[in-house]
Length: 141
Image 1: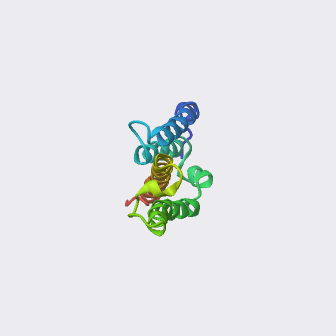
Image 2: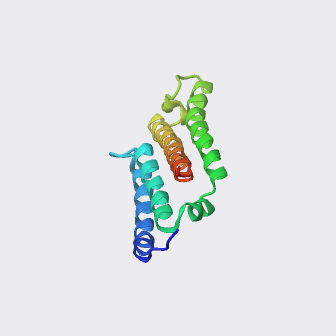
Image 3: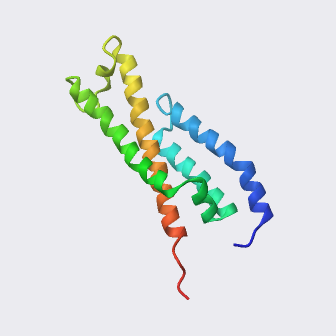
């Protein structure tokens, strides 16, 4: 890969605010617009920008494909686990009110946070996996 200084400098400048904005969208998602899906896509966009500036192999050394595969499954487990815990506690699947026996509103907040965290983790990991799969393909001559 030919090293381009401008994309490298621009990506170094933009990646930290992009990641910070992804965290904001993730943790603000239960109070307003945004949430796990949007945050996952924004986080994956930062990884794609890094790969465009420094190369796919450099991105794979920073964000290991094996770790990304584990994160896909972990996000689904967080999402499903939240629903299973509410079933175990005697309520409906993903009925968050039972997650805190003293204050159902606090249980709702915790449940939404956990579900959004699971969705964000899965979406980011799947988007990164798809990008790595397409970017690693060899070109036909």
